[in-house]
Image 1 (cartoon, one colour):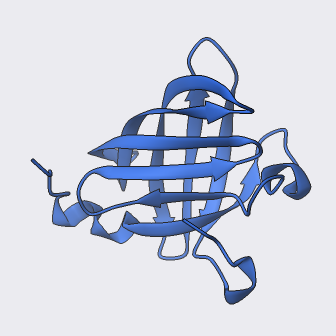
Image 2 (image 1 turned 90 degrees about the vertical axis):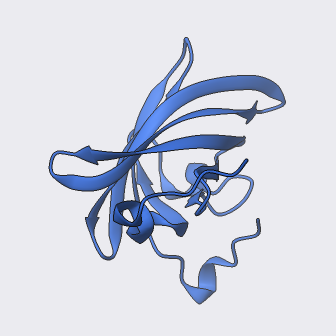
Length: 123
């Protein structure tokens, strides 16, 4: 049964282009494909950056007075199975900020914006 995301989280719905990550430059973020994070209307989502890809299970939250989501995720990183958690919140209509945590591993903050025509993001 699909879950519906509350209307308060609707501004996050869609694909966002990761433009910054702590400790990573743009070439690293886009190593395999243009870095992205995506939130679907049914509480699911996905991300891809560096050599990793993750599939999200999202829950709506309010983060510091801003609309947001917390999520757990499972995925692959350079061929290895990985999992973790994270969060993202809407800073303004053009930017989200968040953090992705790898279980028993690294974590990284990120900033994302709507993709441009030049980003050519595949899903």
